[in-house]
Length: 359
Length: 163
Image (cartoon, rainbow over all chains, first blue to last red; front, side):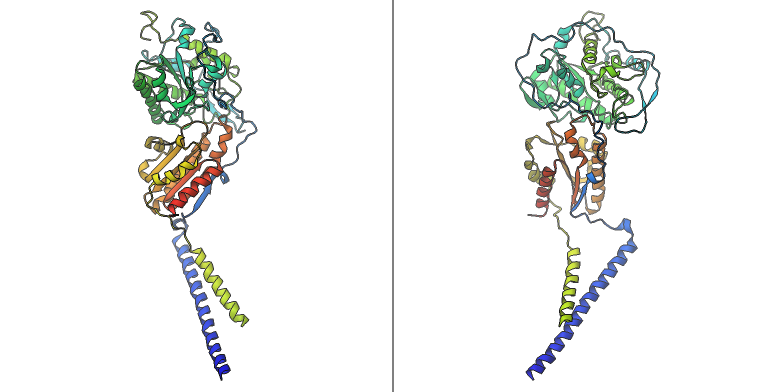
């Protein structure tokens, strides 16, 4: 009987177990069907994505860079901090007299060039930029802001200038263009050598006097330079609109003015790029010319000066000549830096006499 | 007997499978971004160089008003020794998460597009491999080395999970 009873009880239990199991599967299947039906009915766009724990790795969607033709910018990357000793006063600049052979070309029409960049074999229509006449006409509207030609102010004038900028300024140190050579105290850039305009408010620059990284504001407060030449913006023209660009530039000037009211601020034009420059889709002379106009307007608004160096670095089509860059189409080298410095010397912010006063 | 056992196992596996499918990680949505940054930033080298960006900086890069975020922080290295940065953006509600994620993705795409290849090429992989991670109502991105990214994301996630 016990066995039977047990057997009978087991049989009843078995039956209950099967029923429970079947019911569970039934419930799950019905739930699944309902979920699928609801999902289909509401459409894919209405389904809320599962945001929990969702990761997007952008490397899956961004193609790897074409590194076969990427030039390494040896002037922009500073791997070692410069030695900061007392100023070397015996070092002489590369040139002591202005070079007179370089002059802006005045007959270039506005043309577009079909350029094949190293990174992209598709020809890109890239405007070469404004004509010299266009630039001159625009600058003529700002006579009290744009520095006009002066007598050669000499090397002593250059020696008074602090150069703040990006990698196009860093080259002044790399190519030993200033007193002190590579140990010059006159170049202010971040340790990387590059500085994008939109970073000006927070980025730390290498302050050669102390060999430390400090903000631009702190550097100006400490140095209180007699002249400060700002050359910034080429990195920003690819993505900064007018308002953003002007706002950052103005903010920088106002920061300097507040930190050192007596510092004479000279905004230098962004230099042109060469036809061989790899990233002409992002940075080209049309964008640079536009940004240079913004700089003039900001300089005028802030009561500081503007010096047009861009014009002495252009060939007859408006490009940076191939002989003027270090191989990447963007960064200058000794011969072109010489033109830059000579242009500053001959468009100086000095009170030479009554005729040039108020330049 | 075998049938019974098989049925039981099948039922159990089915139920457990569906139970696992329904599991969600439950993030807290009331943690301040400052708290999250306090957990993440110290994990980076030279953490004192990580600087909070201004509203203007963010809105200009994102081409969007910061009011679309309930809370936010973008931490960028002030020394130009590398391009390290990360950001945390909290959507105003669950429905806003997708939009926030999109503007962050667009920002990272723009960063990659405007990268000048001649500058610090060794840093570019950080931009190309930038990662976005959504944790509840928080959208987090990192332009960091893989190890730093893992550390930052884990720190933020742990706080949001109450660990």
